[in-house]
Length: 497
Image 1 (cartoon, rainbow, N blue to C red):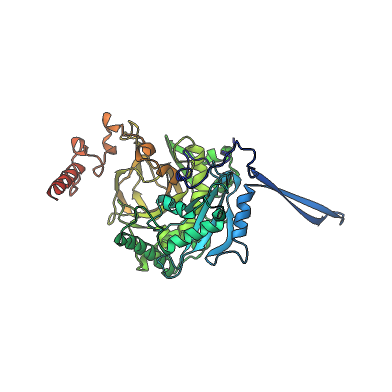
Image 2: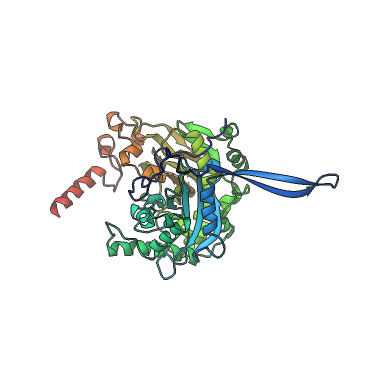
């Protein structure tokens, strides 16, 4: 069996569509209102010579979905019409990767306006068209990391941005208008019913400036890691058999490459020794540069965010070409696993002198890829428990031993922790894959309601950071303040404030 044709969102993606009264809906029952064609067949005719030297004609046919959208993009980016801030190239999604109910999706790159916090940076804009375009506007999101008061997680835009399109005016129903509004919001936030206070806006802009300046100031040791912007991942970096299986979208070829270590936990040969060497040397080089580097996440203290050093596009390709196809296959019924569209990617470091272990937790992701880059180490495996929302959340499931070059894939909601490292040093590359459409839902609909308090836990699966009842089963580690005490102190501070 093949992978499903078309990535499908578990809910109505981009919730603002259909909610803004200014955007008229298309009356599909009105025969006097012609509907744009769903697809268009293109034919290319070229002369060729056959084996006998005789000239023949070769026909190449292709089917393009939503020709109106494609025509509008071509017009917006045409020489002489293209805005100065827009790049000429348009990256159309293959039909099998278009998120339903959209019929066409494209990436357009836009340069940040000079004299603003967004100068000297390029931003990838994703436009997603329904077959009702141009009666309804495309869904828009930033496919690049950006810090902006009107951009939500995953690059989704607030309703104020769609209001600014004034799509009810026929003259504004164009891709050019979409790009103009997005560019203007980088110059100055658009009018809003709930404007962000200026001090908060300034802090957000400083985060953007720091990110841009760091990336521009860094001189890579291995530029090839940074220069890969499109196209397939090299077989010299990623396991060739794995790449062949996901490119063909053949589950029969993929299944033997995945080992199910425990329910929902898969291990696989992920990357080559060359890729591990390049990435380890590059991250060491960045850390030695003295450029600013934030903590990987709220729990790990050692490592770095690779997106913030300029490797965002490399990790985009890992998400799109490796994680998404596998997740669609093995987690097809899990909310969010079939609509992954952004990521937080980072490295973590463990050694007896730095982070020795990591307390039990679950990730801020829908799906996590955790690849061991190596170095010599002893211990420092992963202990897996259950999935948040199930009664087995705090029940032991599996111990995974890291092997350089191999990765483990699991749901973000899977509770796990890093065991003590006893010698050496271990470095891992971690990609938290996320779904912007799922994350626009209330939290209770994303993860379900906790059930684990009804079942006695396995001691290995207890978390002194997150479990208020930790001390009912185990003594706290030396020097650790438990969650129960932290909550009590927080209540006292609140009462005194």
